[in-house]
Amino acid sequence: MTDDLHTLETETAAAIEAAADPRALEAVRVGLLGRNGRLTALLRDLGKTPPEDRRARGAALNALRDRLAAALEARRVTLDEAALTARLAAERIDVTLPPPPRPQGLIHPISRSMEEMAAIFGAMGFAIAEGPDVETDWHNFSALNIPAHHPARDDQDTFYLTAPAGAPPPVLRTHTSPVQVRAMLARGVPLRVIVPGRTYRADHDATHSPMFHQVEGLVIDRDITLGHLKGCLIDFLRAFFAVPDLPVRFRASYFPFTEPSMEVDIGWDRKSGALGQGQDWLEILGSGMVHPRVLANVGIDPREFQGFAFGMGIERVTMLKHGIPDLRPFYDSDIRWLRHYGFNPLAPALLHEAA
Ligand code: PHE
Image 1: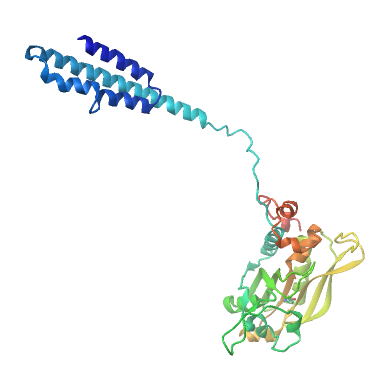
Image 2: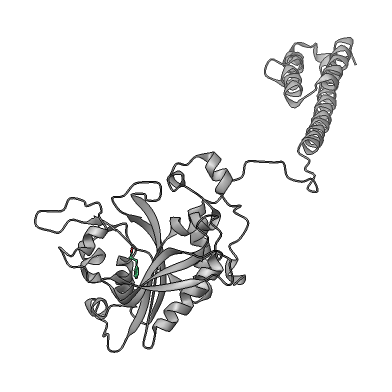
């Protein structure tokens, strides 16, 4: 081999060895075998070699090219393996380590109460029904035996939307009771549903919000009695408040869509707020046997079917259960309040099993 080839081989071998990453190695390859590479130039100049030397020179150049190409390839494999090893080391995960602390989302107390109610009533065989927040006058009032100009409409002062001329304006529902009507029309009877959802009234102070939540309950069958109403609500209230002997009182009342109607109170101590203790009563919900006229309004024969309904403010029972003094922060999205009153999303609502 001539000196110039010897020099080229030594220098290139050193450059290959020095290439620390695939990019540096590629630069060496291009400098050698690329269009303007040193070895490419020598091969191009072969024609200028005197004919008697040309054969030997050609063989030497080809052999050199093969050796250097092999060295390039070997170095490439080494560099790739080193890169893989480094990556495996860098990305190694010790699955036995505890997870790093990270900010965790919490369940809002209203959602938590709804989940608990779904769990408790679900265990009693209730399905969940839903309806729209913007209701027709008929569903919210008339079908529930509250005719226009009836004083019961004033108790539920609310927000109306504008309607086409002549039509009664749609209303932000004042209670979840219109879903009684929708559920009976859509599902027929027998029927056993609860209806959690948003409701609206023109009210605003520490215990009233213009937007709040209710859960409605409706059971219709051939032989449902007041005894079922009482047993169902007593079981529910004791499970929800987790007080097994919680005193529950049924007090005669009036709703246009139930007959007879009852307000339901639970026993507590007003001063300490302790549920199931003391001598005081606290009103929790409204209930009653579904008025025959409501059944007739949705095409159900009240001589064949009867049942009970109830409606409960979710904020109210949530504040009581968790000792939350003010209603307004429920809707402020203040992260400090949520951190204090929120619930671990991984802790399931299993209260029905405690009953
Ligand atoms: N809808 C009534 C209210 O909001 C509550 C209720 C529901 C009463 C069902 C009786 C039966 O005040």
